[in-house]
Image (cartoon, rainbow, N blue to C red; front, side):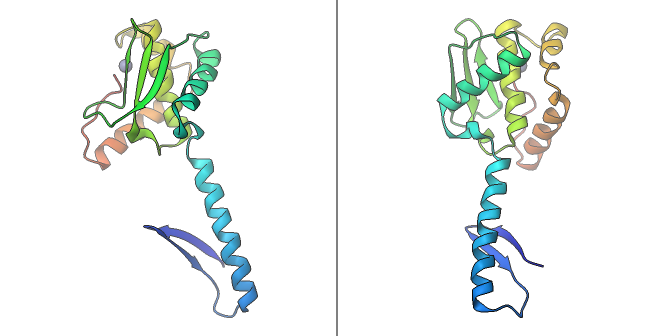
Length: 159
Ligand SMILES: [Zn+2]
């Protein structure tokens, strides 16, 4: 069995004892690229820029929210009590950098939540009706609760 994992800044590759040098070389390279591929897949592609964030919002809005359009969406420094926020009157959405490394489907939920606020302010029945068009809503809320608890953040809602 060959396996690899990350330990801080180091990648540890476990190889069977009886391998030739060239086999070792081959497997180290192979496992590094596999690890990188799986990490890239798990991360959201929107983590890279505000432009990518806006593009993702457009896709989600098209799919779940009748094409509602924010005027701007951007990453902001971590907020103390919130994952994200929006100003419906201006159509602006801000996403906490704490979410840069969550899985894509969790970030998608947060974006759908904020986009829904452009339609319905507050957290009433109509609001949740919209948000639940996104099928992973419940799972994502659970994920964020766990993340908040694990990091001792005390973040209880998305706002
Ligand atoms: Zn909200």
